[in-house]
Amino acid sequence: MGNKVRACVRACVRACGQQDRDRAGRSLSLQFPLLLLLLLLPPPVLLTDPGVLSPVNPCCYYPCQNQGVCVRFGLDRYQCDCTQTGYSGPNCTIPELWTWLRNFLRPSPSFTHFLLTHGRWFWEFVNASFIRETLMRLILTVRSNLIPSPPTYNLAHDYISWESFSNVSYYTRVLPSVPKDCPTPMGTKGKKQLPDVQLLAQRLLLRRKFIPAPQGTNILFAFFAQHFTHQFFKTSGKMGPGFTKALGHGIDLGHIYGDNLERQYHLRLFKDGKLKYQVQDGEVYPPSVEQTSVLMRYPPGVPPERQMAVGQEVFGLLPGLMVMSTIWLREHNRVCDLLKEEHPTWDDEQLFQTTRLILIGETIKIIIEEYVQHLSGYFLQLKFDPELLFRAQFQYQNRIAVEFNHLYHWHPLMPDSFKVGSQEYSYEQFLFNTSMLVDYGVEALVDAFSRQRAGRIGGGRNFNHHVLHVAMDVINESREMRLQPFNEYRKRFGMKPYTSFQELTGEKEMAAELEELYGDIDALEFYPGLLLEKCQPNSIFGESMIEIGAPFSLKGLLGNPICSPEYWKPSTFGGDVGFILVNTASLKKLFCLNTKTCPYVSFSVPESPGDKGPAVERPSSEL
Image (cartoon, rainbow, N blue to C red; front, side, top):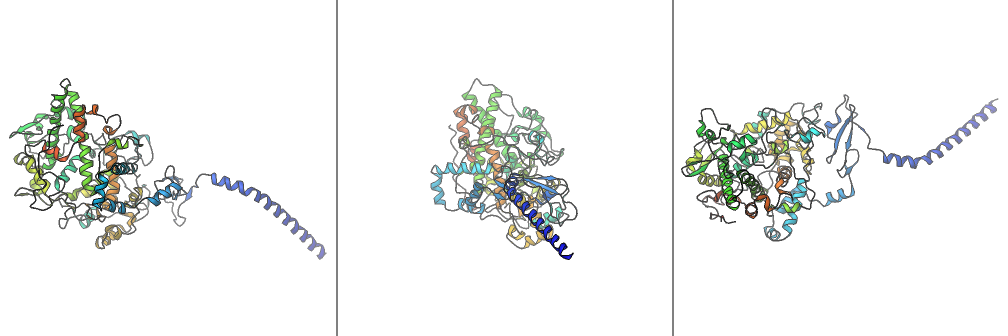
């Protein structure tokens, strides 16, 4: 009986073995097509960290790299959309061949900056050759391509929507908000609560001793920057920090002509295309509020006849801003006279509109070739030539981003007091000073502002206490809009994230304080990161300010309609007369052709205190 049982078991084992071998053969025959099918399937929807007990929004980890888009599924799953990034893989980290090659050949931002700021003799050769235009085209395209166009996100929409594109009342934003349901304010890193804003500002931003700008930048540059940028940085106080009143989203000279038609009409003379003005002591100045009936923000008690009326309602705050407004008013009316002489049949409207286009062109020319040139410290001479991009893929539109607005709060430029001749004015004496412009005249103030050193922007601890509240307001706004951490913006603009606070600051004391306040370098906020980053050699700020700010700036400048093939032609500017005005514009011409004497005018202080600066000869007014 036992033998029969053992025989039966052996027979069953042989039968089962044969079945297993048959199944194995069939499975082997299916393995190859199954492998192909798996390769064609979309990326898997991934689970988040299994060690976390409660579900955490997976996008709080910022898993998608290289501009990949994080899409949440269910409670704890996500998928990265890597389309058009040049990368693949679950988190968009595997480069395609051309992406890998491009990354391998691309120099680091610090090395590029070193090349462009050293070897003057080499760059003198480049500037005199065709290589200059080739490099300029490369700079414009590489920088501009970092800015999404059309715009993507805004305060209310952290995803692509028609509202984000069509509603110009919003600032756009490059990165979506930190999700509301994250474990910490910055995602998953750092402390549960961000540091007190006042404590942060007092410890790391407040000036102990004035730190001058290493490039010799002066306060004329500071006033020029503030005047220029307030045509497109006009946050709506009523609607909130994510909204703007500057609906042109670029260089439209709304700070000269007003940001709406009603204000523009109040400022216009409606004769020969000119703007209204008043004459005091034989000099032309902006008209009074009494003449124009426009709203200007002056303290209570300043009578309307002493309030000057210009396109931007807040420019009465600083005499430096009113100097700029006066010069551009005079330039507008001067150009109107030139066009009237060239086109006697043109009516007031055509003279006004064409003059406005000419002044937009002059502004962009000065900004690129002198303002940005000074900021960069490059030996490569930057060039304003819209034709460089005519054969490139380029969109002639722009949308101001909230990150660009926050980045541009450069109040460390402001000195501790303001010196005009032998007089020194405190903030209390300088702010809303309605008599200084007329008492001294444009020439004296421009000369004085050109000779006084501005402060260093980056490196921390250089805000005068009178303007420290501005930094605090920016940080509070960024928290309200839930801007992503500083390191996420570095990655977005092609830089490596910092691994420690000491690497960020380049020193130990502030790094230790940041460690105490934030707890993790990946939890550092955007604006504090920009201001506390160590400065590049002989530069006014650090690497991130340049690498993030330059793309916004150049896209806005070259994205202006006048730079498009349809606009960039002599007829747009009233013929050769206007076209030459645009192509030969300079800071010196702007001031010296609109003053009786030619002051020292530059974005840099003279090389030595006793130096009168370059010879100030009046530029030719011939076309």
